[in-house]
Image (cartoon, rainbow, N blue to C red; front, side, top):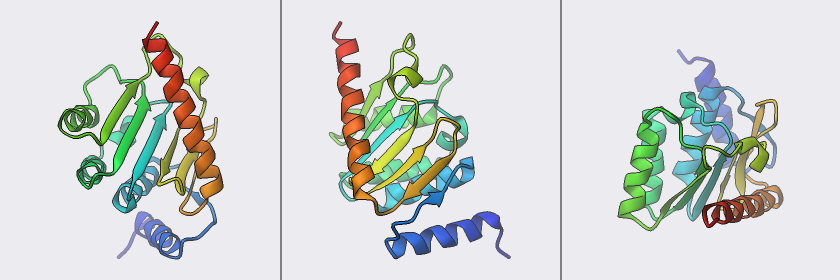
Amino acid sequence: MSGPLDSYMDSVRSSQELDFKQPISCTQPEHAVEIYKLFFRKAKGEILMYQNLFQGDVFVDVEFIREMERAVYRNVNFELIAQRPDEGSEFFERLEMLQARTPFAHYFEIPKNTQSNRINPRSFLVVDSKAFRLENKDGEAIAYFNNPNIARQLTERFVSIRRKLEGIRSI
């Protein structure tokens, strides 16, 4: 018997396989986790992630953390911009380990005294300059598997944010 998450993932997988250019709603944390896992599985070159608010529901999922590691070990460049949570995080511990062991994992920390929503109000993830997941200010999110125009704009935004952070660090 399949549940609502199974039905959701069946429609997501068929959209991805057909390279749809239609948005997929992925606001629920369990949907976000599944989209992220699928993106990490399918990535070939690069994943850029800006996380405005670090939400534990998504980043504590063991399988998500494994998919992140597998992608990095496949030489997929993974860059994360986020503010480190106050409590310990297996996700960040694993990312730091990967950063020390491979040239394909990079973490850029938003300083604690910086309001992350002033840097960028929306969290997003871009895969291979083609696919992305984007949240709006209200926390609603959509994903696209094939929208290179917006994915390119988000990639440019990510690079701009990274440059700002490098400027903050060098002061």
